[in-house]
Image (cartoon, rainbow, N blue to C red; front, side):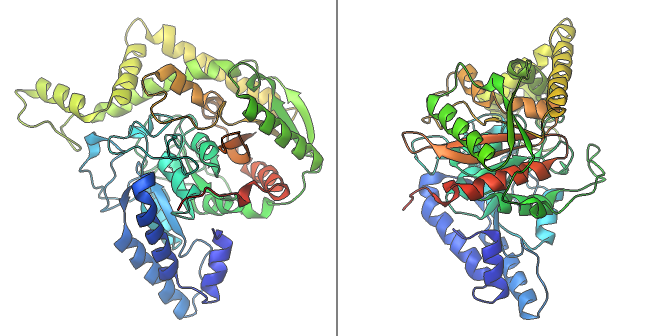
Length: 483
């Protein structure tokens, strides 16, 4: 599978046209979708139009950017003007936005070719993409297994070569966990680095849009295109955005890496522990100074997250009441009946579960006991990271405690499903950048992910470590065998 830079070279040398590259991606989608179900909607006509416009620029001698003509998938919780945005929910089944999200607008401006909207857990709530109201996405390495979630469609599409890169969103691990399960690179940027305008809200203090790529360089190129200040997003950071590709260097001299002690122990699969330990040894060989670091409150991330995120979801999803937009139940008896039936019919089981938990924790008498306490623990978790980054530059740990599990295995066991996000959640609570990249396979040939965590706005260091490791190993050359 060609990288962004290789495709760019083919375009500028006129070896291939953008229309040919796009058509090849569309053909692959058509061939693989009956097995994979990565896409909720394929935008073939729009993609070919965008590709033709790139070819027209090349024909007139106009210089094109790196992303021009590159096939990209967009998670279906980012608004796309004139194209359905369903969040994989019956509630937004017929919703066609009248405006474009900032990230998709930036990509369109850069000449990227959107081949479709990818599947997700409904409203981005889940860790397996089994909570989609429309279809269950399969893992390209073993179609009987899940691709992870909630951005499972984007991760699977990139792993299977249906598109070169893709966008996902990450609220508690929804980019990094599927990246680990599907053997691709996925990054959750610093909170506020990428605009959330046009991203359908789940938990506003945790949500962040980020890139998926087959390689570290592709991921860095995509982040270059979407990062930056946006006045339409009140949480957007006004900071200088560097060119992340300039930090892709092959050595790690004098870089200090801390291994989070609390992530190794009970519940960690032995194959994952072995692969991650070997990867950390490799980082040491590349010149990094490696030491063990303790983040004592790390294990409280899961209960803290499952109070704060559902509380914010309950507030954000209150707007889906059958009045302004989205689904409305037919022939309600009165206003209350319309509210109740619309929400009962429009939301799936996991979304209802989180709304109920969130409403409970925000209710009188429980607000102080749960929500306020969770926010205090969140502050302590941030403090642990702050202390850690006084000693090291980058933190390392497994991305997920296991490899991809069989579809259906955890569907009726929410707690076991929530544990999939054990290693990723604290990064969102602290607003830090995190990156997952492939670091090996288990005995079933399933990918394992190494998670790197950086200090605020230190994506540059994450890319540096990830690139050096990727260049020193052969994981990126191994692809799922799909016919």
